[in-house]
Image 1 (cartoon, rainbow, N blue to C red):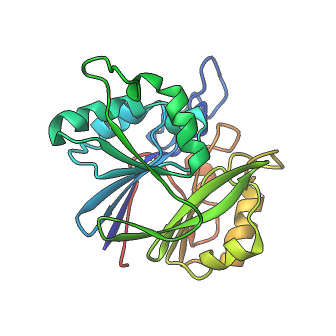
Image 2 (image 1 turned 90 degrees about the vertical axis):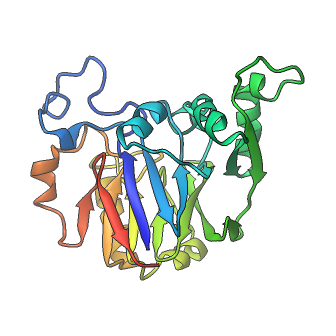
Length: 256
C-alpha cells in the first residue's frame, strides 16, 4: 500500500500571493490555500518526502509527521529546497543525519546554500545531512524501489519519481518520449499545471490534460497550481472524471 499526502500544492509564491486581491487569493475556501509544492509518501512503513521548500516546517507540523526516513529532491530551486534547515528536528530524534537523495548538480547547490552544514568546524546544533547522488537509474531506500523520471523545466533538468504504480512530476514543461514510456498506464499520475495558455517552464492546464490523456492513468492529480487558475470549486467541475485538482492535505491511497 502507498499513501500519498499532498503537503503543498502551490507554485513558488503559494496561494494566496502576497499583496494580491484576485478572486482566488481572496477565496475563503481552504482548498484554495496552497503552500509550496511538496508530497509525503508512506510505503511499507517507510516515510519519504519529495521536496522541502520554505513551508517545510509548517507542512510537517500540520500533517503531524513524526518520522521521516529520507528526502527526495526534484531540483534545486528555493521553493523546493529552502526548508532543509529544519531537518535538525529529526536529527535530534533519530541521532543520525537526514538522508537526502538528488542528482549531483542539485547536491552541489545544497552544499553551497547550506555551507554551515558541511563546514569543517560546525556550529553546535547545525543540521546533519547525508547526501546521496542519484542518476536516471532505479535505486532503493530501505527496500523501497524508486525510479527517476527525467523532465525539463525550460532548460533545467528535473527529476520526477515513480514508486510502484504512482508517479509524481513537478515543474515539467517537456518530457522526452523515452521518459514518457515510464509513465503510461499508471494507477496515479501527479503532474504540474500553473495556469491556462502557455508558460515558459511549466505545463499549462491544457498541456497537462493533453499529457494525462496520452499517459492514460486511472487517476490523475494536478499540483503546483497558481492563483491564475480558477477557484477549486469552479474548476474541478470542468475537469475529466479521472482528473482532480490536488489540494493541501489531500490523501491518496493505492496498492503497489
